[in-house]
Image 1 (cartoon, rainbow, N blue to C red):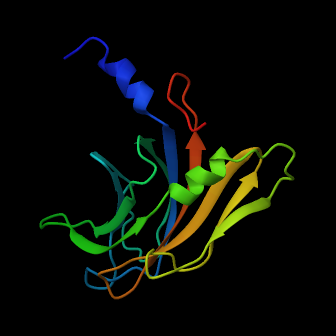
Image 2: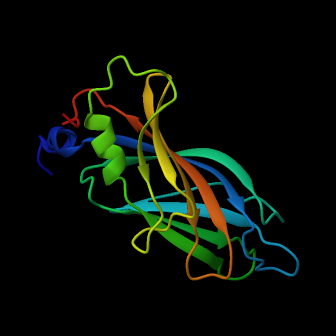
Amino acid sequence: MEEDSPKSLMENLLGLLRVRVKRGVNLAIRDVRSSDPYAVIQMYNQKLKTRVIKKDVNPEWNEDLTLSVINPNHPVKLTVYDHDTFSKDDKMGDAEFDIFPFIEALKMDLTGLPNGTVITRVRPSSNNCLADESCISYCNGKVVQDMILRLQNVECGEVEIQLQWIDLPGSKGLR
């Protein structure tokens, strides 16, 4: 390994994307009467997961998972699984989302914007997994995006998430 590899990684890194996995709504039943869901977030070779919530098809995770972002055009994949003790975990649907509109909003000059201002809205379409309009807002000096993702490849279920950006000193940054 070359000596400068950590530095070159930082040079390519735009920053960190904090994905708050808030909750699941009306998730599919995969056990007898319920499910033991957890969510997995993937981007490039990164894979992070929430804790398992026992016997709950409306789990409240409220967990922050942080991904390193190198390419803003790369989609993020969220998959929900049902935790099984003695067999392979069952898949309970998945969704992909783009962070490009969020990254574009971060690049804007937001000086003097009032707290709570909606910068842009992303509408649900056949090209995304949004269950509802997603707002990118300016809150408490930070840009945040709230999303409700409709899970695909499953009979029902949605997952609410929120995106937040973390600038890293020494990284390439967004400017």
